[in-house]
Image 1 (cartoon, rainbow, N blue to C red):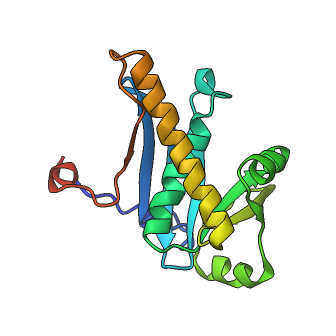
Image 2 (tube, rainbow, N blue to C red):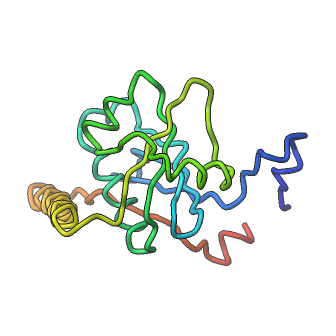
Image 3 (tube, rainbow, N blue to C red):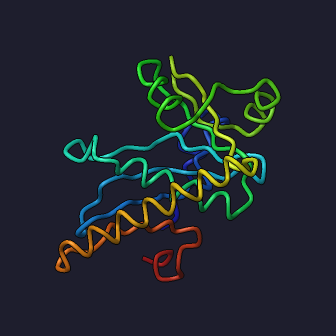
Length: 176
């Protein structure tokens, strides 16, 4: 059975097509999840992202965002857009290097029909960085990979965190 979510609402602007789900797992347990929709090269939106409450404050969100940003960078997506509640704008801007929307991006966001929530603030992060920023991002990816390898070395019975960004669902998944 195929659902047409756009027609479940009388509001044509509520279009939920084209979303992908990214999952961060550890030991067969979902740690973090995000919904991502790519709007061409200019931007991708990530309106929903969350980490299991017992896993917060342990760096899982940083690992997860590094993987998501890396995949989007590989796809030549220029910007990642998120809606953030006013209370946590500081977390996104200070810890994860997001910034307030640039005026040039506003028109693109409006014409792309992105999701937005009441009292939320839109933030953006450039994914096609200059050489210095690209070097820092590469170092961050390497640091995440090294940390994962160290975890595996310390306890061979544990599996490292598994990041599965399903950019093209298999035929079996579609038929299920």
